Image (cartoon, rainbow, N blue to C red; front, side):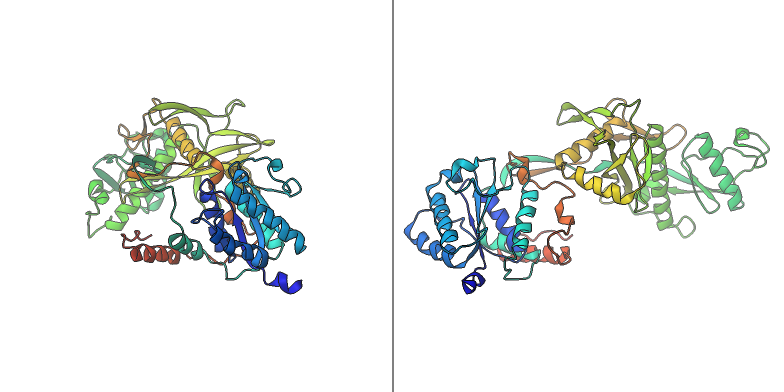
Length: 492
């Protein structure tokens, strides 16, 4: 009997055709990706004589685990029921413990098949991602033999060579929302006012930021701003004397053409040279946006990466909720809420970018507080809460949260104005850059098949995965596409 068990290396996936093909293929790919030998019938029809000559000896002699994808459809299929009955007999005749692993795809009743009520079912209906984790944990616990080393490339290779999806690309127009907000052209000239020493430049910087007349940044002895003329400052007094006549003035003024900087055509042999001008324009925009966010009531949190993110505190004990527009319809979205006995806050970080087009690039986050105001200091506690909360948030929710956040910056849900000079603003749209595709596919009707962002792939509870080589994976996909005669995928 022990020799018999040692020869059992195959994981047999039993499923309904064609109803459960997609999930069966996905599960098989995940298992193959971990190094398991998988048999998943997706091309033949259940019940044929030749088919039974193939699978009877496979289930009887080679199968280590019989994974039954239980659904409303599969429990009614004659071929699936025959596989089920045969597997029950094999488990009984060979005394195989936990030979059958039932997976509940859609909440089907365990009373649908004889022998099913006595078996614990792995739940897939809420999330395929969480379900596959439970399945892999069970296989790992039962020490099911792996025929190959786990590699992220095996799933892609198997997909291209073994599977043709019934969910083909369709000729339909689909819009995809990016996390870029188009950056309009700033004022033409960015001015560099030079002072006699750094102490003077710092004093001018502090005075201007305290007065909030207009955004400024400093580089050595230079004050950078879109204002062509600097107010006078008497260093021996406070910033309230900003406009007194007997004050310090800049020694000289230089300027850089921002339109040439954005077009990568700016050039100069003296300061600011090309890279200086580009870097300082980015620094100025970062500060201008920062000041605007603060003026809108946002709070800041310094993340472990030293990046600053911005979030709304709760106001008067009420969760922050805003209206936003999506596809021509007005919706409501909370940007904060309760999390057990604490509170969560949607947050963003941003970075100005000039290529491939001028834009503010946003990144979404979740932070947590006990009082609705101040983010937890414990980084590990934050990471744990973020993962738990993030597992319930899918792509659509992240998109809607960003749209709501951008709308919260506006007084008319259309644009928000970022001051860059005393009388000049950048008019930013509350709608990010949208990409349109002439091809699409039908979205799944249930969220269970979708893996949420920040999913379990970041955890290492049940298997020691090798480091994933994204470039190698991409290279394999390119080779597969070229072998099929189609255009290669773009480089990362």
